[in-house]
Length: 603
Image (cartoon, rainbow, N blue to C red; front, side, top):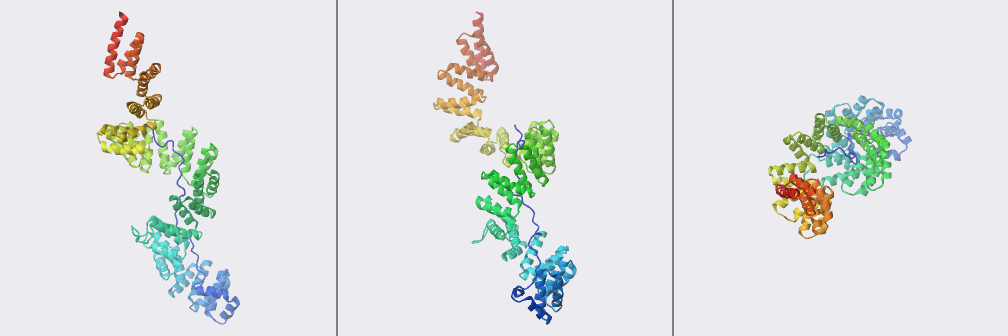
């Protein structure tokens, strides 16, 4: 039985790797003004007009002039006008004075003015005050003011409240992400899509009502909204959704959009699409861009590309780049590369590095190396670690390890675990044990699983089980499937079926295939067929091959042929071989013939 996993291909994490989103890079700019009307007026009325009105004591003009100067970045000129208007009770001025002081680094004084504005009903000030408290770690106060802002309809406040609630794991985040997204907040639309896609909405129905979108369709809708507004991570996620459902062309367009905006994971995913389309050169270019931006998965893909081309030095360089980017798959792939180059000692070093970092397939590969050099006690814990982490190959390998020690119960438990995860050879081993125990129903189920997974041995055993129960077309189909996969015993059986229906040509084809692969029964049956067709010299050659491989009936046939042509000494040798090989009735006939030959020779 062959250990599984020692010839593994490049491990690609995925088309793209999810990155944590904490919302800190989202659109969280302070409001420069509270009132849209004042902003529109600033475009229509000249600055000099504001100045004249402000000098005449017009509070609204002071507030508008201060906001205009603040937007321009002239903090020194803006501050006196905003202070005067705020002191006169203008809440927009109080909010904007808080913005100015925050920009100058006077956070506590800014919070004081925001509080005044927020108490007076400024949603923008409540939002700013909530952010101020969150930055200082006072989450209860932050939630209070952000909720005031959100409930007043301020979409930035709604987003900030949703971000806080999601950070704490509280319910209600989806509602406020939705409120902000509906007002055009692109980060909120992206975060809402993530919440919907992950199924984290607390009030979501299990089954959509009539006219409602499915969970995936709604998530896609919000990804589209965010991506259309230039959100590159949303474009990446949208591309992934589209690729998953087979819409590769549109997925590629969104990946390209995100990649051009600098999203390395999108560039990596675009590279995989291009590779699958047969354009390796373009794929390599996008992978190179992504790898240079620190995407370890892209560096691994480049390494695999160079390795496939036989450019091993370049492959090693990119695998090392992946490892430097923090992708432990790079160490695993370096181990595979060393194994391919015949440097198992060097490979062990890389496997260990990846295995200690929690890479399950590296742990399995390391265990195989240790087992191959006779260190079974050292291999077992690594197999166990890999299997517990979910490596199906490692679970199967543990079954091999325990079976080799005669610990059948433990071996079977690991085989069953691997079989439950779809491992073909493990399912075959479980079925063999069930056949031995007489559990034919479960054995058939596991044989079907293994045969469906491509195991020729399982297909043969399934056919044999069905044949013993009742010879039917299905059993013959499984025999033929196993035969086409090169299973020698199945080839002999299919040849027998052909011979029974009088198709000597097909029978000879299957017997010859089995015989040339080393089947002594195939060689013997081919000899019988050739002898009946009048090709006795060729038949003798195949019987000789069968007898030399341990076929007693072939040895007896050769003894009879030698006796007929008078080669009594040769006949005696083949008789002795037939007696040795059996079965009992053949041994009995060979013994009688040997006795007669001895009498003839001594006469």
